[in-house]
Amino acid sequence: MSSVQPLFVLQVPPSSGTTASGNGSIVCVEPAPQVYVLSFSSPPDNRLTPAFNATFLLALDIIEIRFSKGVVVSTSSITKFYSNGLDYEKAVKDPTFFRNSLYPLWWRLLTYPMPTIALINGHAFAGGLMTAMMHDYRIMNPHKGFLCLNELDFGAPLTSPMASIFRVKLPAMSTLRHMVLESRRYPALEALKEGIIDGIGGPEETLAFIEEMKLVQKGQSKSYGRIKEELYREVVKDLEVSDGMAKMEAAKDLERSRRELDARHRVGKWENDTGRERSKI
Image (cartoon, rainbow, N blue to C red; front, side, top):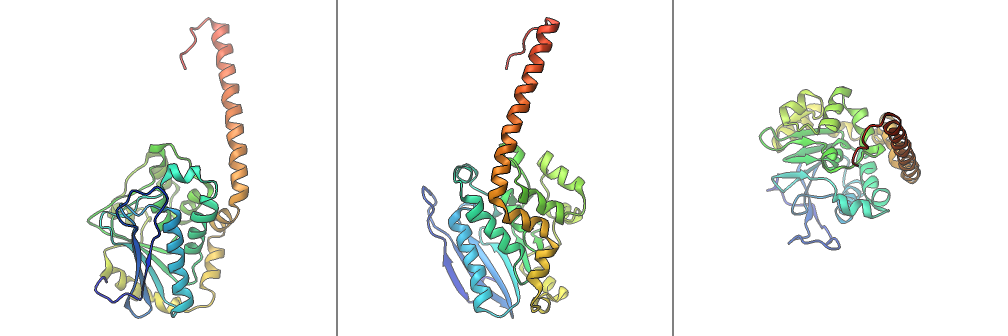
């Protein structure tokens, strides 16, 4: 696909405080009629920063507004990573990141008025895997890379959209349990067996999948995006009410603190009543 002349190239603006040597880019090519491949490169590992997200959104807008309807494929030109997810520490310090940057990108992908495919060429971790799940289909390199939700490893919670996309799209809750409570890493063949991805291969296999599924033809329907809004309405709703969710999460945090304080009081009373030595905390 890389030998095809680009339809357009977008530069990813530098993020504040970035140490990357290059700002990155998103290149759009058309390797087959009405098949648009967005290859992104935001060194070192395609983090979902505000600058990257905005550039990705712009690329999707350009295809919809300026080109004939077809199929959109996203992939990475960084061979090791599809995406390594959020820059988590910066994301949680920015009160507008989820509402104004990440969720709009996910909403756009989830409800895009054409078929979308994530061609996962390398690792897709945490938010990177979630972004791939917002596509209609996923095809993964069988020789390289893992899929993993590793929030447990770095102490991050799952927001409502992060969890609901897997509840809606995975065929078995047991798979989701393995993913989120065990941080299990899935190579391509195991991911295919569990229904996380829809096929294995690279660019040629992706084009064959598009042809076999007649996705270009299906993408001509005026109702394609609206049907997806209804099909995935639980996730769509979670993405659209982010302000309310932030308040709900704050209330939940207060309730968790209250429950922990109550638990400490109960344990302290038990220790006093039984004469047991107070545990060091």
